[in-house]
Length: 300
Length: 300
Image (tube, rainbow over all chains, first blue to last red; front, top):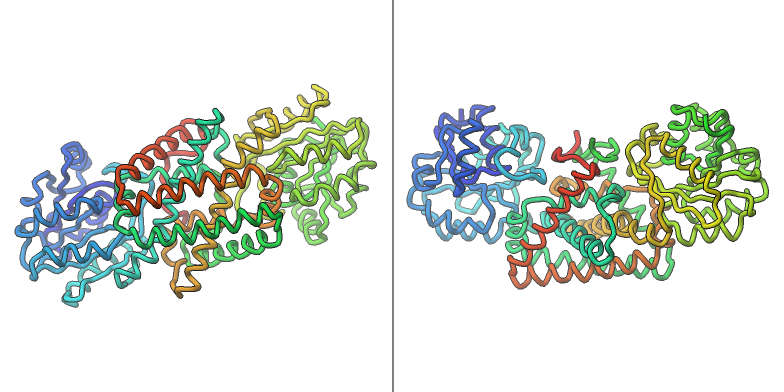
């Protein structure tokens, strides 16, 4: 047992997976959750994944040794202002958000000095949302990046690290600026591109009255899965990682214009060279254990 | 049994899957394959998926009732010129290529009038290549689009339709222009975008000396799978569907610029609206049986 009381703020896919994993691994004597949505509270209680759930955030955080914010980034400011004076001295406060740099500043500016604020980012998730979508093994074998603020106590960082490790995660500690840059490439831009390809397809489907869904197995299907991710969460991610995402989009568009020109010029040599290069990275991903060699031919 | 002799030209992922599926469903008394590569011929014979295999295309097609071209589009012209005078009268000649319009013309111009040329496109595949990557159920429950030329005999079309149905495919008959337009959206552009996102990521990884592979589970991983598809096959697809792909890229870039501007302007409302819309199409894809609701959280 590491913590006497853990409070989860938000109980969607990530929050409810945390609840299940904390229970399974017996990491809290008392586990509580809060949500603004009465429907979510009802679901969470019915699922019996926490000991107590309420919309009264101020009440729920009282005496918690670990507080985890697992809500969309746009709600953080409200949450901090609400809970900051209710937190126990020396509480470890963390979140699970996908953007770090401006969020860390926001917390540092607002919370009392005696709170240990250490931001977390478990690189785990599915395209589904809500408390029913969670599962206890979501964090197993996944990377969790910790971006601690400068004034943090070393023992608290060790404690939070141990917490994620008990859930099965592998830990990396990283500067928030580097985090936001890397994630813009590995996660944010892939999602934006998936949203954009599906949106463009819908537009063409409507204007040309064609059935696109029917033939989506040739590639588009995989993008629709990613483009079905939580719209609010992703809206907030792009707005909070504005500089990195817009810069990466510019590079992406420049390269896509180059590919288009190669197609126009019938420059097969150039296309082939790029396609061989991108095939290479797949080997590295499989070697790094990020995926298997098992081919994907549609899940049934 | 439908055919006395079937000849497969090319024995990669699709050709070797056809071989396995033809054997399994007993659709030919005699099944032969040809390949330019001696290594492929050795592999095919070792796998025992055909009765005979050789690099001598002219010899292999003799007396075949069905000839299936399953090689990259850029090889079609050579193949036609080689086999056209060796084909049996009334042979059904088909292919499995992903682009139709200019290919159909090429065949019509070159083959004798007594040959039934009906182009096929099974919308099936994985990111893997080569004879070992094939499997007998590849075509099961997948769409196969037939784009017959005008002078075709109705009975031959029925025969080819039945052939694909026996392999488990669902059949659609479509005009080649419409085919190329729809596939540019559902398959070609998704692949080009996947290649481009992986290429852009590699470029940034090299210039910034960052480890991107390690954190690829957040979205990029899924694109690397698609971007590991056969480089030659895809080079040829883009070169043969030049007009449709470049036009769709232009629309895609225009929409991506719009999204970028919305991020720059902090226009959360616009982002949210688009992300909600794209989530909708996912429901349609699942209802159409093109994928399942099972979440994808990395394959282990």
